[in-house]
Length: 265
Ligand SMILES: [Zn+2]
Image (cartoon, rainbow, N blue to C red; front, side, top):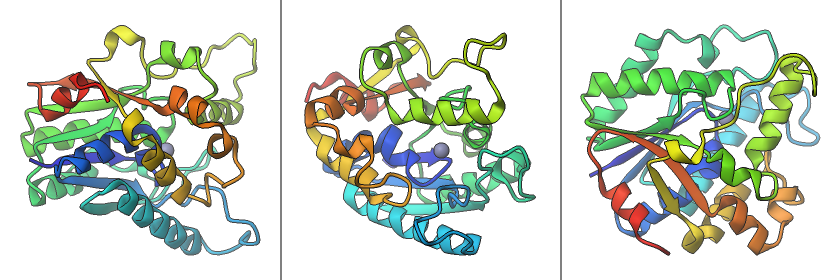
């Protein structure tokens, strides 16, 4: 039994599914993380401005390896596409522009190699609408079909839950995306909503028992989530309220992940 977590950028795996990965790993269940891009569109580290794209990419690879170690991931793979970033001009090898068949074939090869039982990718809105996250949904769905997986899980967030807690990083990501897309606040056009309503979630994993591991995995992505950032400095109770649950929409027969969902921590 192997679970494959397919994510867009380094740090998404920790933010959206880090606790679930840690809980699976703690039970000895093999986990593979596949990152579609190297996160080349991320924040340049201080003093690193103007450095070649490759420098940020190799830093983010190191951070991903560290986060994987913290969470107990067995295998970390990169699909090799470029981060589409937030700008309106996409690089030629941007993941958002990748032909679905080609990218899905690459991903399906990984699924076959590790003999995946189930795959986790994003909901159809890409959780919050980033172009690379939307591509994760399209490519994940197609790769699951190519690999003949019976069960897939779409990682999402419960928007009703997030309404009542301190701001989740996805909230900051949404703000950045909407600013870039030019949604004026209070304007005529409404941006797409984040995640799904509670009723659409099939599988909620309580990760409060591994919450410090999740926070450490997020901290491993230090170039994007600095030590002094809001999320890494909030008190433990607040952090647990915001990040202590992870949400999925299952298609296909239940697996061990659903069993995990029924066990309180
Ligand atoms: Zn992302």
